[in-house]
Length: 75
Image (tube, rainbow, N blue to C red):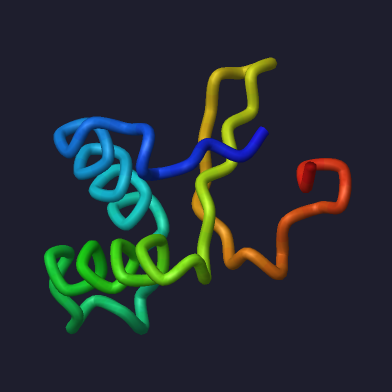
């Protein structure tokens, strides 16, 4: 299920983005600050290039590029 980022409070959105960038860190990205990564993800969401996907079965979320959203999620 796609969750519009504009429907989240600023605190909730910031926390979600921080959690996402913290768990998605790669060894090659260690020189990039978490703040820079979070700002990049926020720009992608604001520009409509990325979306938040929520999985109700296990109450998890991820952030993906819009073009990578499975067809079953787009409605």
